[in-house]
Image (cartoon, rainbow, N blue to C red; front, side, top):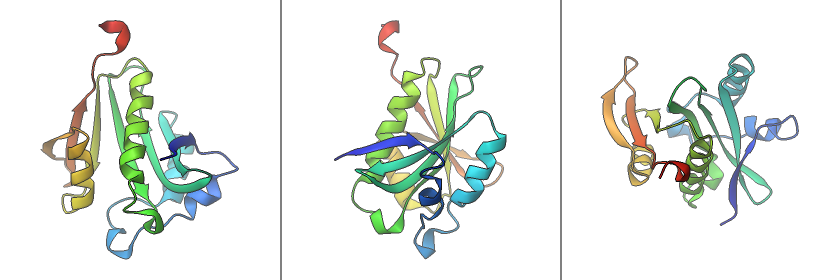
Length: 152
């Protein structure tokens, strides 16, 4: 499966903002246009288009500040037309690989709505462990990354 993540650029940003969730998922994640606007003012934000071949099929955004050992994935979505094909699982593997390659991150956290069963299954299968609800009522899950090859 040719799935990769790529920086959001002027060339693909319109495709990212055109992505849509199924109606029953609309309350689970902020809109991509708002996320891209937020990324412009947040120097730690790393927006990524999820690509399957030449098609933009999803979007994610994370932060991995240089002065912190924790990365936070705080946006993750696959367009409704592309769901159920394994793209979310593949994109999650890709972003975790990218984050681990930064070299200074030891764990990754992610938040999601507790009633989002698809997200819960995806993150649990990747090794994330639920830690409880945050102040906004979202579930926090954490993944400890394996030690970098240079530290073994």
